[in-house]
Image 1 (cartoon, helix red, strand yellow):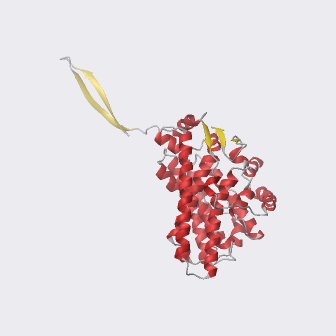
Image 2: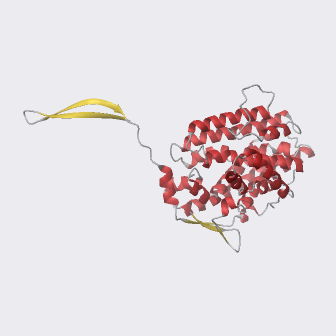
Length: 382
C-alpha cells in the first residue's frame, strides 16, 4: 500500500503551504481472521441430527480383521512416529476401524497395506493441519516436495529423479513397503492412476495452506480445495488393486464414475467438518465448511450445520443418480466388467457411509460430544 507524506508550513499572508515530502510503501497489517472466527464460534452449541435416514438403502459393514490391523499399527507407529504424544494422538484416530469401514472385504494382506496407507494420511497431514508446519510456509513447501519425490521413487521406481533420504523430514518411510506391495496385482495403468491421485492430494494440501493463510475463502473456493485434500480420490483409485478389479480406463474416465467420486469427496469432507468442528476449533484450524459459512454469511454455527446436513443429503442423491447412469452405460459389457463396476461403486458407498459411521465412534472427534440415548444425534459446545 502506498502512503504519501506531506509537510505544512504557515505563510506570511496567513495561508498554509502543503508540500509532499515522499511516497512510502507500507505493508498492511493482515486481519487475524483465525482469532476472530474462533471467537465467534466459541460457546455456541450445535445439534447434529442422526443422518442414518439418508443411507437407508446401503448397509454399512466392517472388515473382520480390524483388531488385527490395530495390533499391527502399534508396531508401525513405533517405527514411523517419533514421540509417544504423537502416537497417542494417532491412536485416537483408530485407523484400523476407519480402514475396516472403507474396504470391507479385501484380502487380509492387502487390508494391512491399506491400514498403513490410511495411517500415513493422518499423521502426514496432521503436521500441516495442526503440527509444526501449520504456520511455516517454506518448510511446508519443502515437506511436500520431498514427499512427492520419495513417493514417486517408491511407487514408480522406473522414473528417474532426485530421491530424498528416507527419514522423518517428510514422514514417508511407510511408502517403501507400500510402494513395493503395489507393484504387483494390478496393471501399470492402474498403479499410475493411483499414483496421480496421491500426488494430486499432496499438491492440493500444499496449495491449500498457502491459500487459507491469506484469509477466509468463499464456500466455492473452499469446496474446490477440499475435493483434492479430503483424500477420498486415492482411496477409490486404490480399489483396482485392493479388490483385484480389471476395469478398463473407459470405465474410470466415464462421467458418471467421476461424478460418483466427486460426491464421495463432498459428502466425506462435509461430514468431517461437522463432527470435527470442536476439535478443529480447539486446534485453531478454521479451514472448514462451517467457519467459512459463519464468516461469509454472518450466520450461527447451527445454521451452518443444518445447511451442511442438507448438502450431504443432496450429495447422496446425486451419487445414486450417477450409479444409475454408470450401470446403464455399461449394461452390454461382460459379466466380469459389470461385477467389477458393482464392486467399485459399492466400495465408493463404503467410503462415504463408512466414514460417517466411523466418525461417530472415535475419540478424536467425539470426546466432547453428548450423544443421544435414542439415536445417533449429538450435541457439542464449541
